[in-house]
Amino acid sequence: MGLILGGGLLTGRAAGYIDPGTGSYALQIAIAFLVGLAFSVKVFWKKISIFLKKTFSSKDKNGPHVP
Amino acid sequence: MYPEGVLPSSFRDPAGHVFRRDGVLYRSIRDPGRPHYDALMTSGLYKELIAANLLVRHEEVSLSDNAPEDSGTVIRPEEIPFISYPYEWSFSQLQDAAIATLEIEKRAILSGMTLVDASAYNIQFLRGRPVLIDTLSLRRAVEGEPWTAYRQYCQHFLAPLALMCLRDIRLGQLLRAHLDGIPLDLAAALLPPGSRRRPSLLLHVHLHARSQKRYEIRDAPVARRTISRQARLGLIDSLESGTRKLRWRASGTEWADYYDDTNYSPAGMADKRKAVEQFVAAARPRTVWDMGGNIGTFSRIAAKAGAMTVSFDIDPACVERNYLTARAGREADILPLLMDLTNPSPAAGWENRERMSLLERGPADAVLALALIHHLAIGNNVPLEMAARFFARAGRSLLIEFVPKSDSQVKRLLVTREDIFEGYTREGFERAFEKHFEISRRVPLADSERTIYIMERKRA
Image (cartoon, rainbow over all chains, first blue to last red):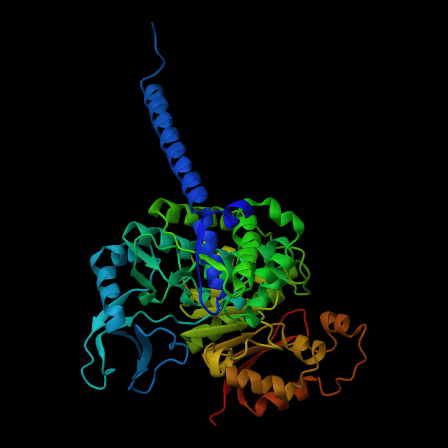
């Protein structure tokens, strides 16, 4: 994380006094990709699990397959 | 010029103010807030938040006379029966308020809006549920802009919750000193080292504190980037999962198991219950303050009779258990709060007027003070006369239990104390309270030397 914070994401210079909100702003920018990716994976996984649940529950409703 | 009655806590936001006129609460919406308010109402977000019980309901009203000169719109929000503050909430109350805040922001993002403040003071408990009361803190989002309330969320919610459950529940009281939330460098220093193993705390408290420190330095480089909507949702999701994973089990405090250790016989307890029932049935109070309410056993009698009942206790575990019971039972008329009656919440903030003291929020129609007076008079050396004065300021009708020195619980209090309480007698009690109240009934409790007194405050 330190690498990300200290890396090429940081550009420009602030003039004058900087409040603690600046550090919060910078952290959000730094972690945006990470939390966005984690969220996408989570949503994708949720969709897969709902799909699988639906698939298997509809098979169960039809009863066991008899050849 | 604004008319008289602008609330002392409503001064930070140029988009509007909350004011009271003829006893009714209104919110003015000035020009800077107008586009945001319109977006809230037309985007469907208002209806969605109302349906989800996340936002206080309002109606637009016309106040042509004496309205704030430059306010195009005035709304009348539903009034919160009792304003409470985060330093008065139990762990789960603060956690539920936190989750409500994130849920609102999540829904706002999906409607092209954002919550610009994540102040715990913008959340109040209405019918047992946490709701946002600051309608104007919902604004149109600027595309790509990071969440402006991120720091505030971490300071007002995540850091105190983490401190309360991972270090000591009493650290919630830091919110009383730090009205804009617990500074993250302080939280990071106080949290146990193991908290770094929790990704959400590592990120949103420890690294957040470090990032703040880094940018405190004059002329430090500042990031100028935008973030995607998915990243904004990801941030909220990360905060939510981190907040939900914090758990505190209410036990092990002095009062949590009080009702397992009382000296009432079943008949005595039944007398006490009946006295409270008869008191609320006769007084028909709209508001009741139960002082030293423990887990809310007697508060519930008042709440069931239809009174909006605030159940105060000094013990965080009792308040937590009381809240969890109320939440599970969807009890709308009971609000458990943490309060040390020997040091009740003071007036605080700008000009000492931004947050009200306990007594400024009263008086209640009726006060219950059961099994409490000996703790005030003997446990805390409060003279009976001063206790009576306090109760007279707190409410109009009073039901109070007198516990004499001969009672086994008072004897326990006196085991390690010198008995300097000569005036603590039934006669002394009646004399002190009769200065402020008319005693209307005395109810002796069966198998005990305790007596319940019912009194009416004397007219000044």
